[in-house]
Image: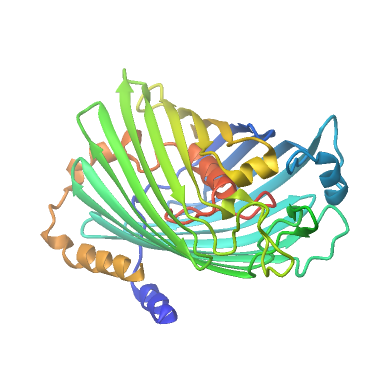
Length: 370
Length: 71
């Protein structure tokens, strides 16, 4: 049934929301992430897009993650974990750099947009490879857009210490299908369905369950199938104010399901500045193999210590900022700051020795059209 | 869930002629940043990555997220 559905959907001429004209541009940015689990990430980004003709564009993106993280604590026994992971602590932290270049190509005409690319990511203990393709078709005098996106990754674990994993690959496939519809000159709505399939070593090679009488590395099922359905909308309230909103339902065959709601108010402050407020709420259930902390036995088939396998909620509040000197200016600056917080969780307490995770993340980008 | 999407697809593509037709000269507002579903591309990319690392869910957006060891 699933294959039939996918086949039928592939036959439909598909979509994306807005046909934007291709243009030469370059963007530099800097992102940051800091949380109370002592993880710090600073990520400079760079992109260059160059049109080859009116209809063709090629581009390159590069993201570099410089990561500093405290030693895993697991209930306050970091020395044990460092021996297990083989990580080399530097004044209580270990450091990592990840490079992730992406090459993209795009074709666009009046009613069709086709884009694709290849992605590569390398860090000391992980190598990622992927490709992606997106197609969008405009219908009804560009009032309706339907689209499909397909991506497939083929990644490899290279554990930092000598551990023979049951398998060292992780493959992820994803199909996104979307419909955009203009409802009026000041409102539009979008529906998205995602089908995701993962296979391989899906746990972390470093996380382990530690109990009084034994310690076992995490073990998850080797496959995972997930579905997500989302709708998003945007409404212009008046000349200066707009509100966008979204809802997503997610469910997978590990019995994890979640609800995500988000809304953002944006307002023009003068002719050059747009800012506002964004709120997001997320709630998920636990995986079928997640047990209470300390409740695992040697006979269990699966072991989880990652709090993402447990039930928890999270909240996010953020402030966006857009600056464009004038409508005709080739420059645009965007920035944002968000605070993210989970609810209190026994898994988080067990692993990080804190009640909940609180994070602050920021973005800054400068775009120049030439 | 597939059926929800399928019904949405049929309703929107099949009935779109009955919807209000927004003419090209009426679309000026959609050119504004604040009328984009993803008004800050840099933030959208960053937070998609963060939510993948900090939460167990994914999907529901048409963006691509490559794999990394932090997940």
